[in-house]
Length: 325
Image (tube, rainbow, N blue to C red):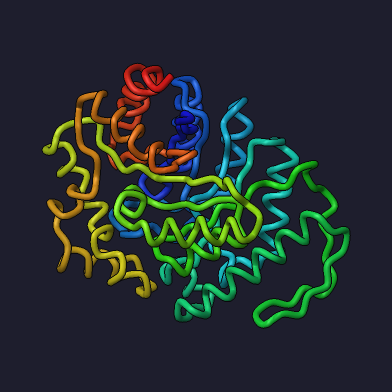
């Protein structure tokens, strides 16, 4: 079983950008091999407090680090960003940091997309995602692009600074329809431990689509939510993440204030913590990573909601990553 890449997920909703840069530097020094950031206009809930621009923050992280893989988990190429703008930004990142950049894409949430005037049902968003991926790939490989599609127009565009190798595109999916898009059009799939462990239908949809598209071994990227501590410490973190167990209830809610209100009404700290790996024992974290690797994970990004991120980074760097071989 190959060892997965172990990355650090920076909580861009929870921490300011300068701190995220410093934490990424510390993560590289501790032995982490990548960093991912969420790409939000707003935090999920207003009590999280932050939502800096992910691309700018990734550029700053790249300048302060030497080896870390850099990418978003995830960018929505549907309403707020035109695919040309995304292709332009990530081409520049790829030129600045060759071989170190990936682009995570997904169908988005209303709280990030609706403020700029767009939001629609899943079927429309999935169709837009597929068309956006095609445009981005063309802009990375063709000198000049003209496109008149169902959702987007590109009236003559070329990217003049492009990396020698295009960044891989990983597509977020928690259900079979998005997993088929990830397999058919992406270079990999971004998902969570619960889906990885308990939804073989989603994994099969992804694998079949990838195989049919001639990608027999695409990446599988898993975001591992964990607390390097006990249940009491996890419960103290949970109020900022009440949305997690009720995500389907808030995905169409455009205002983070309203997201927080709904989550406080129908969610609970206990329910949040049930979805996390919570343990002060390194062996439990090692076992979780090894299990996910056995289920096909090639990249695992550690996402801890704890306020003391240095403690998490040190814990993984000292007790977990070295034990993985």
